[in-house]
Length: 467
Ligand code: ADP
Ligand code: ASP
Ligand code: MG
Image (cartoon, rainbow, N blue to C red; front, top):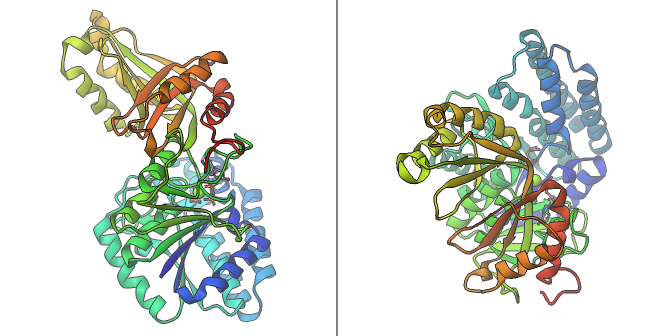
């Protein structure tokens, strides 16, 4: 069995879905399970509709556009009974969504729980469209709502999966469908709590759904079909001569995605690694290319580094003062405060003097986190053992990643040397003991230049000595 996941662009239009149908047809004999994202931009648009409704205006024109897009795609791909049935199901879903948005408009209130419910419609619609297209092409498929199978906690918008229960349900529910000769077309991204309330697993998490399914049914492989040729040495939108990495390890892929390589959700590796299920990344629109294979195997890059990744729109929170070195529980209180707020701390740096500690967080988390820290440490700030907590906005983190970095000297010197020569100011640096990456903070304005310089300095581009 092979689990195939198609991302937003791959199901973004009738032409793209036609391509999906051809891919499914080609590999049909290998017993497929398909996981889908919403059609491209639909999740963003659903969230905007929810926000508009919360402001008191019904998002009628966006809702009509959503209806029209799905309706036209079905008409272009399906015929007869299949077409009518799919149109009817989509119509029902849009009506349900309309009712929910109406409720939000009246209440002028939008909880993370409601955001998840509204966001879930993208995948619930796309599975109906694609399944109808496959059936019209003579491929026996059926849409599957993952909320019945993927069980999570109540951390809305970033729900955590209950692995044991989810595995049990996925394997009991999906394997018989495949044995019956059918292709399950499963919603990515969504799950539900024990009480059946809709949750989502985080933005871009359909990749994660695919590997959860693969782990549960012990698939041979997971194939992530997307709009680029594979995991690359850098984001091709940022570095023109970025190259495809033919083979990387689970650890390298996890590190790259954690530090911003959007091509894979960072949790994707977790269910696959346990059973050593290889993950392939392939281009839906260039099927002739082999893509990237992620497994326990990897290759050695001449200079140890395989990719340069980045995360934009970050802030640095600085906590400084004598309390850090003199009062051992200051650190504990600091991280208790961020944990209680569920702030994701992307990077931490502290010099050995222990005079200050810097936390790097997403800009959307910064205000709330600073407010919570100021409250927690108000006495220390008042008595002067801590300075006023400060924030530096408009930053980005850049990470240099590669399994071969361990034990290769000179990587930091090469990275910072080239940046020094070109006048890029490094604001903070971190390296984990795994030595799989070095990450550092620069100003947002320097981001693209930094990634390009570092990428070139490790010979990762087209004309570098690198395979
Ligand atoms: P999908 O909708 O198929 O899930 P995504 O937009 O989530 O696709 O991910 C694919 C995008 O990831 C690419 O279009 C590319 O711009 C971006 N990307 C960022 N970093 C990398 C990288 N290192 N390698 C490949 N793609 C990357
Ligand atoms: N549709 C969801 C998102 O846009 C999940 C995904 O595409 O993987 O975040
Ligand atoms: Mg994605």
